[in-house]
Length: 253
Image 1 (cartoon, rainbow, N blue to C red):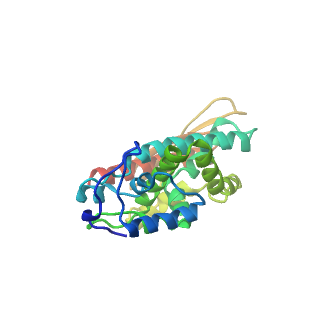
Image 2: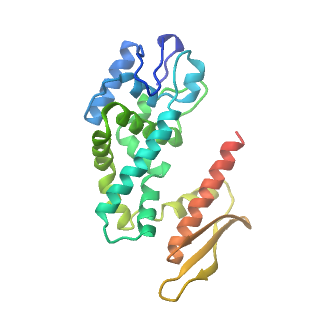
């Protein structure tokens, strides 16, 4: 959904300052609020959470979602961490971290955002195409906007409602192999072959080992990870490799 810059007269950061929205945009945001199950007191915050930097740069007075995304990312990790501590009281730090890393990944965020049809409401610049990473970032910004406008209880309820069942699925190992699968899809799509995992070191006693694993693509080590099992270490290495590859790709743009 694209709107011309002439429709917007002012902006709001995380301040609650007035933001004049055109009637059609207000109607669209009301529709999204119906999907969320609650309405904003400051609709400008919701609009900001759904405004990509490419649109803001073309639209005088518009504010992009980057500050709210920063805030929403912290809120998401806090609420998910608290939920996992209560949901899995016998799990250690490594197990909790593994589940959380899947839940807060861009892939998971984009999939959950699709249930809200969030991409329909995100404002993009004229030359920018919608990407899963943009949808994921805007979803985090949305969480930041919910907290800012409606408080912690409301954003906790939203996160638990959307992520709760998924946490159980991750724990059952239905999607724990996300990072290895994602990395292989990434490399094969670019004709780089299959990632090769190598155990570089095993520390600790036999009953409580710590595995160190590296992953190489086309003969070059891209990521390293540690875990209480070889599988967990491979997942960590795959995640590090994906982050490195994504960062390099972003930097080259």
